[in-house]
Length: 324
Image (cartoon, rainbow, N blue to C red; front, side):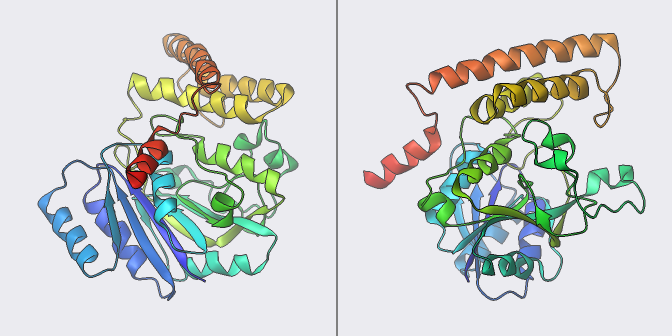
């Protein structure tokens, strides 16, 4: 079984090299590595490293002139040769046996995707020592509120889940080429919720998304770079954060589910209640409220535009180049 590992990257240097080195140390025999590079100019050391690996055919290195996480994912899938498509962020470290842990799940024909366990380095200090969850609560499969009950850090037993984390997820090739499900390139900025949107569409196929805690990695969680060009502290990031949440809801959820998501999003991310733990400063709450409202209307506008424009601008441009 051939695995195609797709690593979208933007503005990363040494940490990208560490990620690739971690991948190349895996003992699984049948895999390829596709690096979808959205960085204009690399530091000399990074440039030489990537050029050397590409010349030795240890990676396939593609350079594009735009920055879009869903666009880069789709770009990589169109060039992948594997039976299984595995997505990694460009700031992760893989333990031994990681690829084999993903691959073995696909012997079950009912499994269409695998969600791996994620240890976030930047959040490990906040983790509850010794916490272990055997089975997630029913709320974790409810599309309206699952995002606040889905714990892919402390859960220790394999089970069906509603979505995966974008830095550690794999899919059967047929999800894309047979069922025609692709990442929505209208998800902006850091593209938060683009993987949730994608996974919600898999429900229509009847295939399962299976969580395997053995397929774990460490996510280093660098604040800037990676798959996008926005710092989490910028106003533009805040705008796209709410836009993306509401776009996912408007596309996939029933009215009741959407209202519950909107309520939880406001309670957690605007008011700052757990599990978000944001500042309760009145000024900051008012500011976040404005972004919340603006994000909703922005997402509504995006959805209205879809009546005459799919928004798959990067894929359309790529296909036009291939056909020219």
